[in-house]
Length: 306
Image 1 (cartoon, rainbow, N blue to C red):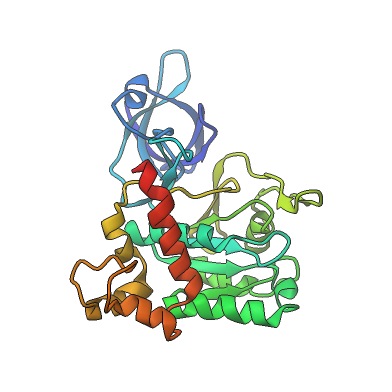
Image 2: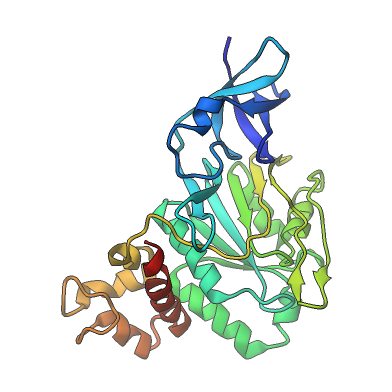
């Protein structure tokens, strides 16, 4: 007889499912679910509600995936038309970034935010290692202005020193929160600071390349003591968009959408048209140039994969 549960860990071939009584069951996934024509590299993901049952050989098997409320998705690789779903059924998404050691690319941040907008998931930027960022006041001020102008909350944080941790803990209370970021930004350290019972591994920065070593090898859900849960994901190097056409990309830049109604053309692409209100807002400082630069790069680079 099938029972209900939630996927709390995915290693690619095995899944840990938390049942309604609080027990954890190791499960495989039924073959027909893998072969039903999905473009995703991973048919079941952390956060998925599923039905499962124990087979005669004693092995747990996921027999059905329940409809998803939402999910975060990216292209599996730059040359692939397959997608990789990071997590499902999320209340909010935190993207953990750093200005130094290692620096997080602005375009990576903007691609992540576009995906959150497209799938109606509130996004929060966590600027970790703020103690390092404050050594470069102009760069820090520019970063903060860029994203506050865009309308995103930015939490200044030092996971190692405890700054900002309580604020993030309160924001996570009672919600399912996804934490993502490049390797080395301190995501696992932050999760452990928020929830000391979490077993998120902590790694060091590679001094040779100033990039983080991957410390989380698969996604995992950590329940929070005060209610809610954190989904920890492996460090992400790139974030290719999928299923977002170039003519709708602007919709997922909320700072652009505030200005777009004033454009001279109803189908303005905000790239070359005269009387473009978005370009004018960039020139007048109401939209950060880095955001506009990300938009242009996504329009140019992603077109070849669509």
